[in-house]
Image 1 (cartoon, rainbow, N blue to C red):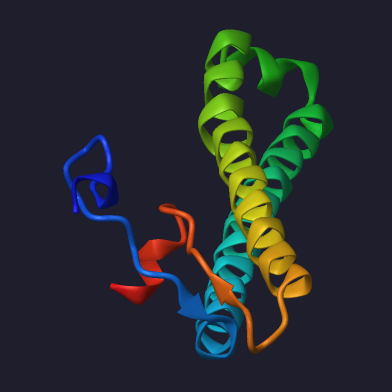
Image 2 (image 1 turned 180 degrees about the horizontal axis):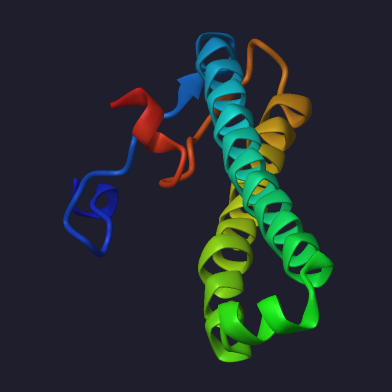
Length: 125
């Protein structure tokens, strides 16, 4: 019994048959792919908006540019980190989770017993 407990005090999850896990993994993969696509769409919308603003600024006359002002470069850098870099890191993490789930599906046969990793165990709770 003691060997069944992990270091955090929770019991090890019992191995499950791969056939009963596959539908959950497929749904998990679809959900994570959808999340990644949504994040990528938000990033694309932000980049289109920035390009549109930049084109509008460049098309202004010199006098209007002088009067309207432009966001300082460090503000643009912070926006880039917030709206592009961090969301794309999230997408990379989601893609890694998807790849791990697909690897589990490819490496096991429906009759095999598999132990679900902790990060994927949330879909069975």
